[in-house]
Length: 313
Ligand code: NAD
Ligand code: UDP
Image (cartoon, rainbow, N blue to C red):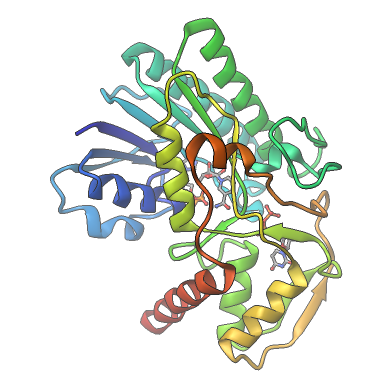
């Protein structure tokens, strides 16, 4: 049994990871300031004696004793990370410094939830880890993109300077139950809009692409990455290589929900990447990992989740 710290553990991905690690027989300390996550996501774990919740903001130092740290704390949806961009940079950069400092003091292994956003609006397609990206340093997405890039820099400097055991995952768009219904991400937006028979808001002409990974596959990738030998640091892409235009996603959601909604075209936000698809050769080779859940299958479970949520609200 290991003692594991998960920052951002009350969020979408964090809550699934808490559940998985408890099921695997570990002790979990979940740290979250509940900015975008909430206790409802982890309420079913509260009675478990091996689970502990600490309300804390990782931009301030934290003192706990653990074997492993998964650093997930950070709002992930553009609407939320742009709400208070200065705090987003503080969370990504000061938060990383605090968690790396903690890992150094207690000699814990530490995994960073990085992002495909480090590739910006990519000119190489699909994106391998060797691509350095095309990121605007002063735009509305920069607080997140550059913050996550700086966090990767810090992870590798702690690795080189202090021989810390690090793992860096570059996460591509992930969806599933427990996404926040109002967080503005495309899968949750379309499903909630379709279930309410409201117009589906496609930004731009909907020709931009994304690759969508179901949450269970992503959690499996995190655990496998943490379990690799000390000589493997990543960065490693984790995501589903299936690529869809946003318009295709809208049409699929409409069909699967049997919705009467229409499609409404809204302006494309600034710096919205035109295309995104992970090259996962490294994850296949080093983690023996690839996603198993097809988009349609994952959407069925996600639609069911939002349908139940709306019935109980
Ligand atoms: P989420 O918003 O549901 O979860 C993030 C959690 O971090 C929330 O519970 C929030 O309250 C908490 N948090 C934010 N700032 C904090 C702070 N300063 N101190 C403590 N807690 C704080 O998002 P998610 O989708 O679960 O994403 C988790 C991680 O994965 C994030 O780091 C995100 O950047 C990364 N990621 C996610 C995706 C995706 O598609 N879901 C893609 C790329 C990267
Ligand atoms: N998008 C959209 N309608 C929405 C929400 C998002 O067309 O209601 C688009 C958005 O412009 C982007 C894609 O869907 O091109 C994915 O957006 P999301 O915010 O989910 O993630 P990210 O842009 O960070 O990949």
